[in-house]
Amino acid sequence: MMKRPLLCALMLGLTALPAGAANLIKTYSYFAIGGRTLEDIETQLSKHGPEVKSTGTRHPGATQMAFTTRISYAQTARTCRIADAKVTVKVKVILPEWRRPRKADADVKLFWDTLSADIKRHEERHVEIAKNHGRELEDALKASYPQRTCDAAKAKAAEITATVLASHDRAQVQFDRVESVNFESRILRLLRYRMERIENGQLPPA
Image (cartoon, rainbow, N blue to C red; front, top):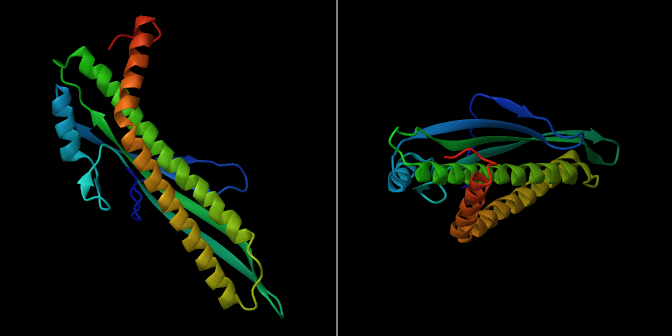
């Protein structure tokens, strides 16, 4: 589930992007859960997962993000234009970490491995959506037409930023909506795939 407060913890890693793309700074944070059964794990996730303010509930994972822009302007006798724009997207991915009890069954571990991998994939997709919109915002700012004054150019930059970030928020919500509908069938498909790989010796037994 996506979150969007302006929060970023100690930077653990920096992901470099190709030249011309927005900067992405990504960090990870983990919360511990216990539980010996599937029901225990579900309870732990509901109790200790990050709370998303937009829904008022806790989720098994979250991505917090913030967009910042640095814009420089060039003024002539008649116009003012955006000379350069740099967008930085800071994201913090929050993931669960299961502290497996000794008596936990192998099938519970198999389910957890499948679920945790899907949670991470889900949150990384939120990061990808944010990164793409950061690039879109940077490109749109650089491509904007000159204005008569720098105040007008700044107003245009604010308009472009608001438009792109609104599009970003809609894309994140739509992604969550689709993922929620397909959750059960996706997990069952992933479980079958992991079991087949274990049976074929491609993965170690749970």
